[in-house]
Image 1 (tube, one colour):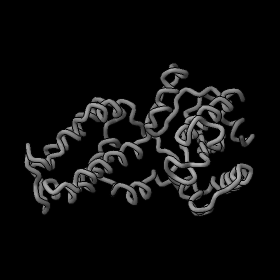
Image 2 (tube, rainbow, N blue to C red):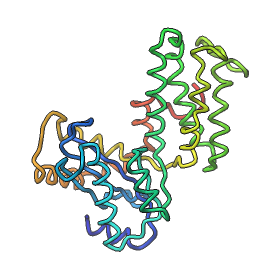
Image 3 (cartoon, rainbow, N blue to C red):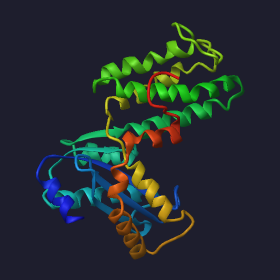
Length: 269
C-alpha cells in the first residue's frame, strides 16, 4: 500500500472502488490481481496478487484477492463505508455475510456491459435480428438514465423501464430503425423488466470501476505471457507507480463506455 495514499485515506470515511484482473482471462486463470481505488483521491491504495494455488479454484482467486486487499486496508486504520465492485456472486456473498454494515454498490459500467451482452445474444436469434440495430441506442439510454436519475433508484427504474416506449413507437420520436413490435420475439420487455436487473439498479452507482487502470495494465502485459508470482507483483507495482496521470484523465469513463457498449454522452440515440 502506498503510504501517502494510505495517510490520505485515513483522514476520512472512504468509498472504495475495486476490480480484479485475471491472467489469463477466464476460468483457467493462474493469477488474479485485485485492486482498490480510493474514489475521493483517485489513488490506488492497495492491491493483491493471488495465485490459483492460494485459492480453492481459479474462479475463487478474485474473491480471495478482494478479501485480502480489503482486510489489509482496514488493518491499516482506514474506515471503509462503501465498496463498489462488479456483480461477482462470491464477492456479493462476502459483502452480505462478512461486511453487512458496509454499503455495497455496483459499477454502472459492469451493469451496462452485462445488459449489452444479453441483448447481443438475443439478437442472434433469427426472430430477433432487428434487435441488433437497437443495442447501441438501448445502452445509450441506460447510461443517460443513470446520469439523470438524481441518485434516486426508483427514478432510475422508472426511466429505464420507459425504454419500452422508445423501441416500440409508443411516443413521438424520429427514427430510421425498424420499430420493435410489442409481444414479438424481438421485444426487449422481458430483459428491461428482468427482476434481477431491477434489483441491481438499487445498488447502481455513479462510481466507475478501474477502466483506465485495466487499459494501462493491458498495454504493459500481454495476455499470453505467464508470470511468476513475484514478477506479477513487480509488474503491478510498476503499473501503479505510473497510473496517477492516467487516472486523472478518466473523462468520466465516456471513452471506455463508448468503446465497450456504445455510450455517446447524452440523450437517446
